[in-house]
Image 1 (tube, rainbow, N blue to C red):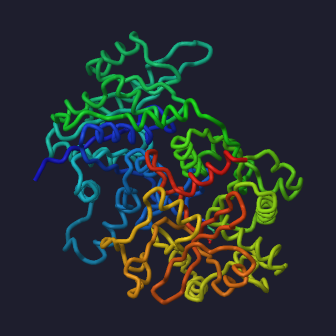
Image 2 (spheres, rainbow, N blue to C red):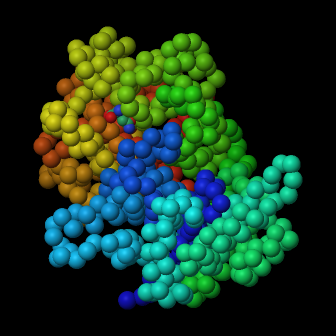
Image 3 (cartoon, rainbow, N blue to C red):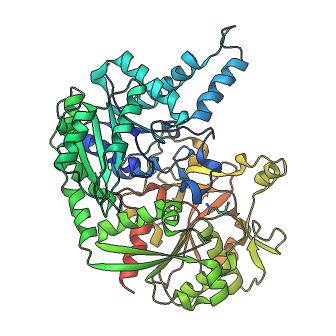
Length: 569
Ligand code: GLN
């Protein structure tokens, strides 16, 4: 067996300086040198996963193919590396302790005292090894900042891994931040020096230091860090702010970061990097042929723009990924649906396209429904995601099929026309308070009608599948139709509880709405996954979250279709 190589990325000074993007960029660079690579994100919190975290505080919940609800950094890895990463690549303190305590309860420690050392670091190492099984190189990002109490077990575990594997098989990258206090006007290295010292208290000497900052690192500061950390200055890398995150790997390569890391890991390049496609897309974003003003109508509390960007990071990135392919710069603006309730739909004028993203609960729903009516009637490109599809169906039922009190049972449980509802099996689970079990999470197959726009868009991007993926659990693939072995399907990820009720499909379809794709459940129930409106420049909505499968080099078909349509406005 080949020796596995590991790169551990640790933050110093403060969090929120783009550690995830730096990690993803390092990964992408090594990929370009011919190495297969995966990423692990360690989140030191005690939550088992990110499923119940508040998106406005922690950023959006990322969903994996296998139904993991995870920190958004895994999303960056997927978009940069172009791979799908499973949920086991996210390790939390909660998971580690739960596994150990469950094992102890089952009597598997046979009278041993279960202790922090060795049991906790061993569990962490086992999880790291399992996730890295199929790859040459594994890049492990440890969440938080060195010096946090909750980081210690993970630092201890990677140090143990270093001892077991040998230093040439595991290296450390420290990502620090260089502040420029406004009254001094000079970049300060002191916090970085302290981070280095804190790391050394854990027995860890960084191999590479990435210096984040507003500006590039100058020679004086590089020298200071060289002397302080005792690492050669060529391994002190400047990482100034960028406008577009996908510039980061290119910037790193200007300092030859890839080859430096390979040397540290005693590896030779397997091929020369080819950044051509990447650069073409970057240039498309830098010099777009046009700008599209996109309104995202959601439920926003009074939070700053920064948090908003974080709460919808995957949708923003999916738009940017599509924009990079098309040469269109998406200019995203957040519109609070409550404002539409108060001020009317006039504020929607002058947008080139409108997105209604996913969401939970009853706030701002009527504003979103008004928005959909407006874009439908005024032929403004519209993309509805998850809740956005549910409300598009409700709007059509109310205003076209004349079912005036149509609603989603999530908002109005005793509506006479429950267009969106819980299926009987879910209803039962909800009554028994098993909320977790009622969510449809992860990747599901949808069978697509061949003569629809959705089909065309997926086909154009090569996303229509015919072969039945063996590794795909049958319940996610759904009913295989034996009489049509070549049934074409697509796969998208889900995170929702309510479904379009099949009993209303015919009514809506007779009135002109097209249901372009369904998931066929094993019990025969067909769940609507896509709807579209012919005779409209672009009116497409999906129960899925296509933003989770968008990658920088392979954008999402629905986002490509939507953004292209805005150009014709
Ligand atoms: N609240 C809706 C549901 O649970 C939609 C969820 C979503 O948009 N992610 O079905």
